[in-house]
Length: 187
Image (cartoon, rainbow, N blue to C red; front, top):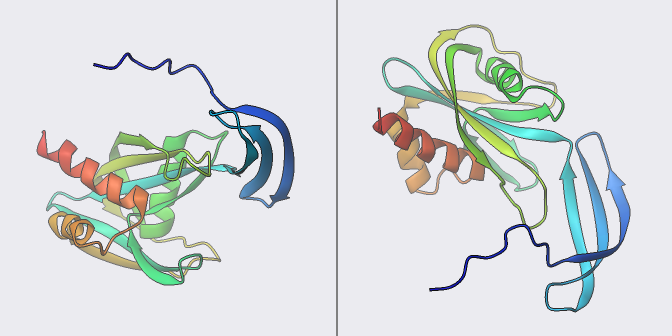
C-alpha cells in the first residue's frame, strides 16, 4: 500500500511567465519552470476566458439532440452534444440555458448539473460542466454568426452507441453522454 499523496503540494516552480498571445477567447503564456525532478524547462499554458458548457437534452420519449458542425482545428465534421462557452463571471446554468436555446431552440424546465471536468488539463485550464436538461419545449434556434450547425434528434441509446463506435469523439460529449446514461439508469 502506498501512502496518500499530499494533494496540496505543487512540485513545479515557476521562474517567469510571458504572455505570448491573446484574443477574446483564449490567452497563451509560456512559463520558465523547474520541473518536479529539478530540471529547467518551459511550459505552455492556454487560459480559457469562458467556461465550457455541454447539455444533454432528453425528452419524454427518450430522445436526445446532437449538433453537427465542421470543426476547424480538426479539419473534420463532428457530432456533439449542444455546447458552448459561458463567461467565467456568469452563472453556468444561465449560460447553459442560453446555449441550449441558441443551438437547438429547446428550453428545459428541469436542469441537473451532472459533471465537472477538465477536457485537456495538460495544456489548458479549461473547466467544463455538463447538464442534463429535461421536460423540454421546442422553440426557435438562434445560431451565432460563426456557426453552421445541423441538428439531429435521435434516440438517446443511438447517441451512446455513437460514443462506443468512436463516431462521437469530443471529450465533453463523450463524458456527458456516458454520465447522463449512468444518471438516467440510476433513477
